[in-house]
Image: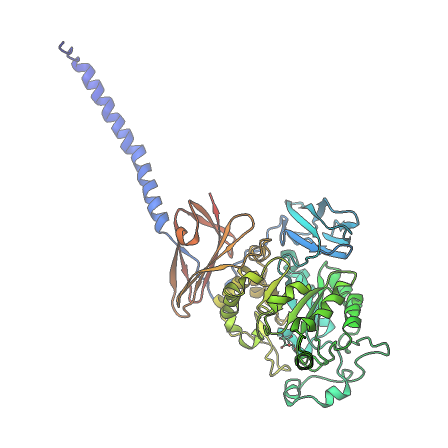
Length: 557
Ligand code: GLA
């Protein structure tokens, strides 16, 4: 059958429609497709600029509406006094609520401070924190774990050593508490304010036998009222005149919901030749508890000689036997006192300290003498010691000596800027966050500047350190120019840290999902700048300043 010819009019009409359709396509749809293709290509190759300028503060100012920060899990031993401040940014007044608190523990709704006595029975309590002000509301799940383990996340705070050394006083410790309260550090979650060495007295005999080195270091220290009886008739340790009332001091620190730390040694003299706890361990533990201290840094110092002697005299005597009595005495007190062991990494404390109820131990010498070795310290933890850091037990690489610290050889001189530039300081804090190090900084608290406050008070960086998994970031790639590290978070997301190890050149680091063990499109959140950096399908390219760092949270989309 032959096909019926179409009418000419019908054909022209069809042609017209076809042209119109094509035109529409070219005018509207095609540009859209083109745009999509271009944006996909450009997104794929787009380099994210994470360069940091000198003195640049990356952390945005906190918003006015409430934001609850800090650990989502907290351990307390059964039947102990408890004190916990809900870290919350936002404009005060803020009204707090805590749903699900066990009996015996109550909340101060204005201050957001929890106090009371923990339950006698071991168990877990799911609590919901709510905070509200005229700008908004926030809530956060919080697990209170009543059990044998404390320090379920790394301990956090400030310590007097780096900035003040022998010149530490009651006034300085109060000032640190004021800085925590007024400059937002307590709202981010920093908890402990620690007095290091030199709060005790020194006996006339100890004073007379001072080494040349100590005499030189303490040249401008005023020993009036410092030399004399180191203990009272009952054997109780006496603080020196720079600490007139220890109980009043811890009351002050506690009034902000913060905690107080103290220092001693198992030897007769501290590293600065002040009175130690030797043969008074039980009495000292009781005294620290009565004064209200919540943490003890227990430093080997002159104890090294005693330990050596004990080992020589007694073949079965081990290091752990030397450190154990204090752990037991601390355990007997009415509230939890964290035990930070300081044996400079000798005798592998990570192997035995966790079994003694010791929550953290130094892995090496003093970092303040050599702040630029921060990578070595962090890598030691990320490599050979990684399995020993976990909830309840932490490798301690020493403090973040950030901003102004004193030179240990010239303690009378004013504190000085550490020899690290802005980018290196960001690297230092980033590393301590991702290796789950005790998040303690040590610097001159009277001189602390806005840059340092910004550097320390980034709530997202802090929260990464406080993640309940306690994972130590793994090194994925490391060469003379680039280091890539990945930390797993409890919610299944990953933290990616990129470091430029080159001190003079900018570089661009490409990290692909295959090497990071990621699949599919990821939302990329820039942690330091607290903003979404984009969405990436299979890799990310980041431009960094010399010695720069980029820190990102990657979450599956
Ligand atoms: C040792 C410790 C330091 C500090 C001083 C105080 O050197 O390692 O962290 O506590 O003692 O004297």
